[in-house]
Length: 105
Image (cartoon, rainbow, N blue to C red; front, side, top):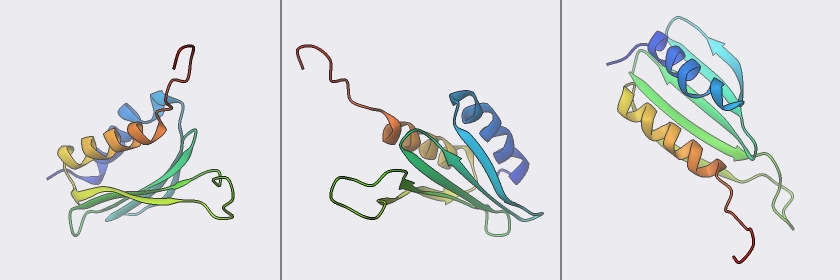
């Protein structure tokens, strides 16, 4: 199992170089919450060392046409380990990818 310190180093390694904004919400001895603001979504990462839990949710930054509320999604969660972290980062990247709508498509 990983620790909260491992999670903080993963965030520094995998999130900050992407020009996404990271805001620490809670950084206690046994729990950690942060918000990552990306281009189209705001991701909330939560970890608890007592339960060895790591999870992520997201909401859209902008409302879809005709809607007056943001959309929400539940991203991967599970044990506080590298496999769960990699699944979360992969899901975050997939949500932020914009389809190419260039010439001929």
